[in-house]
Image (cartoon, rainbow, N blue to C red; front, top):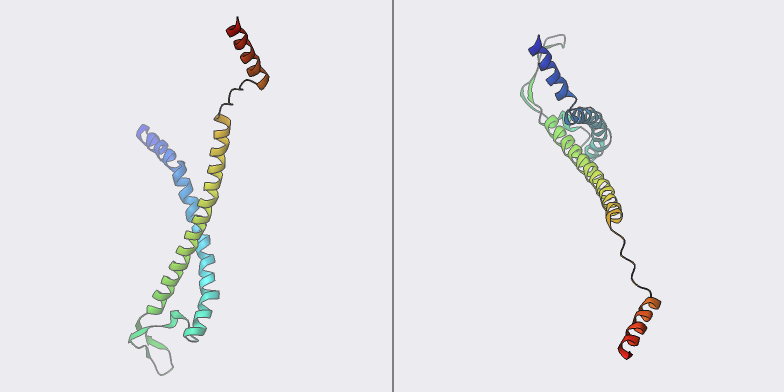
Amino acid sequence: MGKFKSTMEEFKAFIFRGNVVDMAVGVVVGGAFSKIVNSLVNDIMMPALGAIVGPTSFTNYKIVIHPAVYDAAGNVVTAEAAILYGSFIQEIVNFLIIAACVFFAIKFINGITEQFKKKAAEEAAEAEAPEAPAGPTTEELLSEIRDLLKEQKA
């Protein structure tokens, strides 16, 4: 029982380590972000691309190896065997758009983080910089010169 308890404590320490929690949040946010990007690709970009390439979507592009076999009633007896290269192209487009979105999001976040770090460094430098000692005033310098001249005459 003691070994199980120490293993559970070790597991608990692992789970609540900052990196694991951050990674879990990233996976959840990434899943939601993926749905947004898939909608961007499927609902906005692919229809525009389809207008240029043709009225069909990429997912319909395929190479049929064995056509489907139908019975007299029109029911599928044997499904077709096909290479769905259109789906592959669609996934490549999705990946490239997701990668570009993530790249620009990280670039934006890094820019903001850099600004905050620079501002914090400037504030820390101002706080650490000792004030320059106050120099003598003009009157004090003139008084010293006068006193030195008096000593030389005497």
